[in-house]
Length: 487
Image (cartoon, helix red, strand yellow):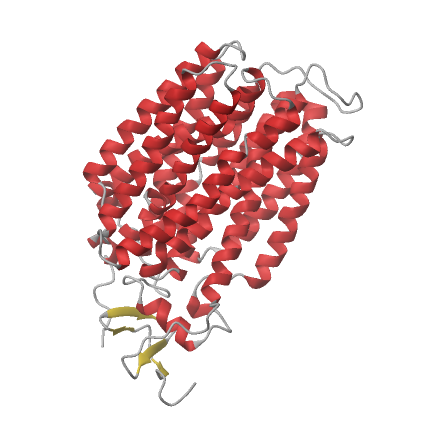
């Protein structure tokens, strides 16, 4: 580093928080002090990008195992299989199997969010990957020996193993994402869900049509999960303060551009303040709307395309993934746009989150209404509407999905665990409704009821979030941290 560049020194302290430009920084018993006004980001490809890319890779891998059942269950229950050597089953409770993941998913989330905030997220993610990989590989075995009940139980435990995923990812984003880069870094992480859906649907559809049949899908995805877990256990890191090779410039850049966040002190969770916060409840309602609408689309699209639109197993595995491919691409567009309007002060953080969320909810709501009124001969029309509607959902990655970090960087994992975990019941409700309402998979009128319900919930959630939502750091983010020295 040249003598004219920004200089930094590490000064030993005892759990002291220091500020530079009125930004507070925690160091593991060290204070990072800036010696000039220049604020450099460090190396061009910073460690923060490496960490964020790996977090996105974890999300992609988890979605491979989360979504594969949406495609494989069609092959598992195909009355006229192309490969007679692959086992098929006659299960009347397919919708319950699809919702089984959600039954396990919502229960541990509040605890998972609190635990990842308290102890750091790296090893929680590694453990979740390993557990998910093992459980995913058990699906063919349980199907053979225990039938649909066995598969349902495995999917419930798979949901439990992945329940800490989103709270932990939000917690990690709060540690690695500077405010001015938060939207695009958040999109880089959470767009992994869209890419995971695309890969899961395409690869599952292709593998189901091979001579190995649907069982090979579970084994290959589980192997990928183990490889990613081992890799991240070596590369992953909880925060810049714990990273051994990060440059001093980048570490300062990250930590000086985070809203008052603690790296070392284990803060008490302000439960009362959270549950009496209108901004939190607006976010909770938004999660309910998102989970019902998105999960209903996600888990039922393959069945709808197969039974109503008459696509074959390989075709609908590929075609149903196209909307999510566009969603993955648009996530980056929305992310960079959100950061740009915030940085240029075109709109506030609060307004940006609300606008992005309105796009994310009203787009698919309109798409669902149009699809519900479409004729079975309009295959291309339905596919185009799905692509546009589902791609709009990606705006939510710059809306409610990273709003947890806006409200409270210190407790982002906890509040997401509460909101996302509790609202998952709505996603499960969607699949249960399909089980009771769609008694004939080829009846478009029955599907229309499901689509209308999801659209109404989307609109209601949009109104509540636009009225009561906020993008400002809440006062209770810093609670229990008032007595720390600031110099």
